[in-house]
Image (cartoon, rainbow, N blue to C red; front, side):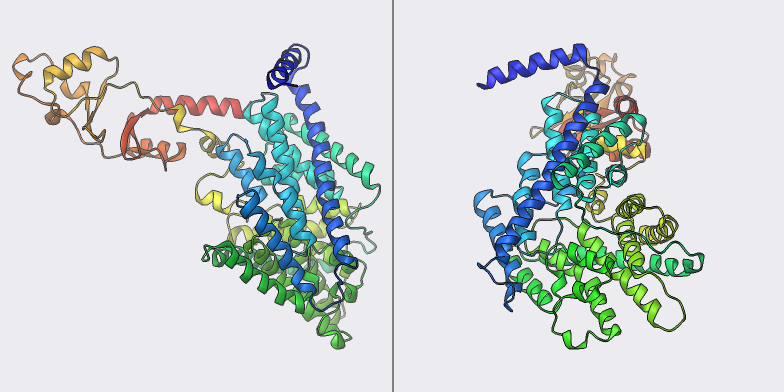
Length: 595
């Protein structure tokens, strides 16, 4: 089928859709499709990774050999070859890429950026890289949603919503937790939780979880039933765990950016791979549970089998001592963040959500074991604290407390831990938020002023494009023009009241306004004696096209009190922005965004 035929069929369908299906109902249909696709993508990532692991566990490579820790380096090398010589494209973290596309690209994501992790993430994780698959699942699903919205000619706001549906669907499919998926999309992508957005998000979550049940049946990542209910006397320990997970979240975030900054010092990727691969190998030799995602580690802790969770280590002869177990679990808590970030720094592809859960589970279990073994007469549920630790880390690292609460509640299929969850996550969130304003996903965007938030005013200003406000229909004049030339060549031919003065290289020297010449414009005696250079006024403030956005432009208008400001592009005069034009564009964007 030719390209023109496809376009003709699509056009006919779009016309039929406009006539027979309302936009609201069409979005609901698409949300179901997006949820289904997000579920399939999540399953695809999981199955490819599982296939790689099965091959590695076969007779081809014996996992019992003491050289198993070299396998992640092999995976990183494969990823390096693919990105360097086949796709020739750097790997970008999935969710920050989506957030950037939402703020500056109208939600348009390049397919190669979104779909490349479908190949690279399973290789990284399948070969033992200490990262997760959930981030790439969200990224690939969001890329597909972006493409679908562009095919069906949907507006920017609807595209944002469908991207949120993909994120909700991925979370729902992986954890079989539809409410957590919905809340994740709202908290991370700053979507409005209105009836207009709520129904598509719900439809996408339900569609995705049905897809997961269809292909996997009742199989879940974590199978756990709460046996010990909330005890009011344990409240101080929940507070302690909340503080502990907050400190761990701050450590996690600072370690993440610190290690990535260290790797940025090495311009050549092969050097990063060698350094990161060596570091990962050393950590895996002493702490084998850092290998891969770590889902088995979490399940073993939930089942009360800490020996299986820790696995074979050089310290096996000391594991009969509970304090050695606590020390090893503490080591996992500390080094999981390092191993994960080293994997990213070495060139691996993956996500941070599962590693965050692993770190939180180890920390929660450590806190419970300490409480139970210091001789104060209290016994708490180690499994419950493992879950609470996971929630506390998600709340602190991602700044997503509601997501963490609903995620754990749905994993346990019970609301027995709801009060402890609220205590732990709220404390973790408040402390980490006050210490680090932006989470791992949003920090770099916030520093550049590109972050969308729930603040409507700031969001609208972020989404605005200065190109829509720049006017270029001004008649420019050179500085040597006489007053007569100015009047005949510019004023008489323009309906504007200001005229930029530029030199031969198109550099802005100043401006002349009608107010400047109103008193002398009819004085014939000055026509040949007065030049533009004598009449012009200097421009103290201008808008820089490359670096200023709508927020900075609005601030400059406020600070100067000006009604028009020139725009400078590549150091040359480009046009003007008027305050009225900027405010009109803001009002239109606000109406479109909030309707």
